[in-house]
Image (cartoon, helix red, strand yellow):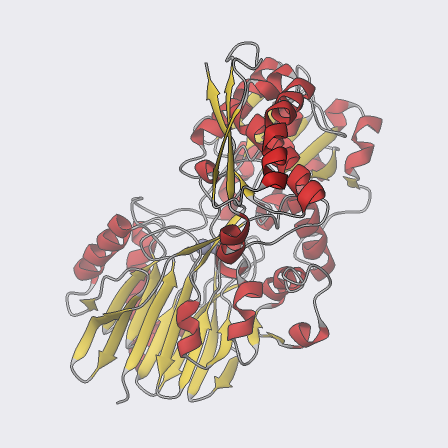
Length: 553
Ligand SMILES: [Zn+2]
Ligand SMILES: [Zn+2]
């Protein structure tokens, strides 16, 4: 048997940017190409993608996508140059990938790139080199998700993608349990299993489980209902749309992410909105507040998204009053607690009511909990098991659970960059290759005119500028003249003059902001960053990374 190599380039030992290289003999494929969203400290960095250097060592004949979440498809435009072949995905996944294809050349996706998208359906099989690849339906927090069975000369590799066992999926498309069991009987060499929710006991529950919680909100709300969710939560959108129809409210999508995704989902039939129910965000003011539901972005407190702007009364179309209710229908991503808490404070100051998981059941996880992970393991009964998608402690816990489910299964615990080799002598981490993070800046900031993409080379070229600002916690006024620190930023006569202007520019930006904006470090940092980047680009053509530091005094 030719040795099989599995090389995780992202998603093992961390959350997000999932990417797995599968190679055997002459054939190599990549499963998923995801991004990770930066911690708030990395302000100015919009995206993080895996280090892609290792991909050059292989002729990768296909990119296989499990589903349309950003942590699985966000890096597709970046890996495209390394893929010598098609991109396989389900209809919805590819529809979400398509607008990204032009991201790197700053425009419409090229014909050549589009032609590489190949749509597959569950139970389809495609041939790639010496691999045969089969797609199996799984359930998750969005429609059209698949697991991938890869038949290699060494044996079957089963990659679960993200999954849970939703027994009553909104689209009536359950997990293909039969095929999973069949594969288990036929023999699976390696199972790569989602570990995201391994620390939760029991089962995660169906997407439908939030229906009652939302119905209570609709029954009791006297004013507007504003619901923040991930832009990919299409099932959740459907539940809200159906309730709006039932309660005679109009639905408006507010924020770029939910507008774009709802349009794609509507076009493809994954989101059904009865005639007359949807209104445009710009028409919200035309309707009495008790007749409106807003579905918006910003559940994580992201300063550029809709809800944080609405919360400080700085949104063009939507505002909050007493009697309104704001629902946070998403999990708190670790690291975002402070930003979310600040948004909640702003909302409370407007007199609106706040509902979140813990008060009412308004969110359900898309990842299987312990009992579901056990079910997957006992259906598939793999010879080897590699936990994926999680931090190291979660992978380790998943490994222990696998042992209790089937003591005969051998577990390989690996991290990004580990080369897992499986051959006649068994399975082990045999080697280590370069892996890490690349910071990408500028692709999502709607406020910057010509959107820029910058990788490390660019950062090395134009350097880093850190304005340090001390602000009064109460009034939001400047306490001292802002300081500027630079690294790798070439200081000559011309740029030195630019740097001298920064303190007054920062002061002007702060002065132009409202008190609420000034006293919210997340919001004011974003404002300073956008202003200074525009300043450097206009005046010098330079694009340094700007990372404001705001101290509250
Ligand atoms: Zn997912
Ligand atoms: Zn994921």
